[in-house]
Image (tube, rainbow, N blue to C red; front, top):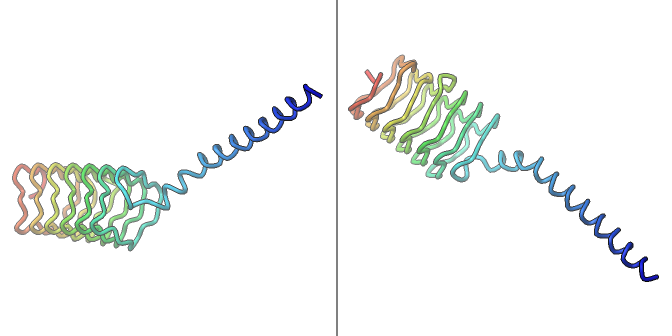
Length: 169
């Protein structure tokens, strides 16, 4: 009888440990899905293959976030902090980036900024290689930005600070 309670106790512990391990594994496997649901709410997030089209992220701090094949078309990112954010293959067509902090942000050649309104944004040191067709960068600070490889058809830079900008004009 003295051994039985110990074995019985260890059996329960083993079951509890197995259940805890299964719960941890489930949480680990589901965590990317949970993270996707919160995309655009805090800095440093990875948002991959996510549709955030038309969402309002105005004033949000998304500094250092990474957007891979995300759809942010027609999203409101006005006055958002996107400093150091990375955009790869992301759709930003028609998005509002008015007054946004884009300092040091990177937009690869697969990113569409077609029709974006980025007037009065802070894009110092940004690397932009995407499609800027029909976009508005009036009054933006483009100091030190690099637009090499960007499509600049019908882009407005009126009143923008282009000091040290490579490819702005």
